[in-house]
Image (tube, rainbow, N blue to C red; front, side):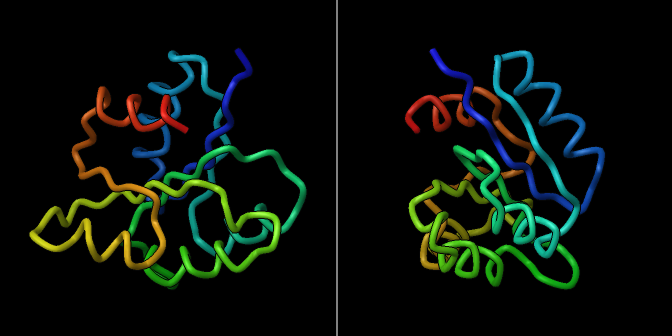
Length: 121
C-alpha cells in the first residue's frame, strides 16, 4: 500500500505537532504549514498531496476562504479536503461542505473518526 501524503494547514504549531505525530504513527506522510497563503503556495507546485486537513479558524485567510481557492487550482480541484474546527456548532458541518470541504471533523479531534475518513480516500 502506498503511503498517503497529508497536508496539514493550521495556525497553531501544537495542533500540527499532535496531528503529525498521530498520522505518522499510522504510516501517513505529513506536510504542514501555518497559513492558508503558505498552503496555496505549496499546492500550486507539483507536490504530492493526497488529502488536505485545514483548520477553519485562522487569521488572515480562514478555511472558508481558502477551500474555494484550493479547489480553483487546476491540479487540486479533486483533492479531498477535511475541514477541522473547534467551533463545533449546529450548521458548521454544512457550512464547511458548502465551502467545498469533502468532510469535517471537530476539535478535539476524534482520531478514530479521522483515520476512518482518511482510509476512505
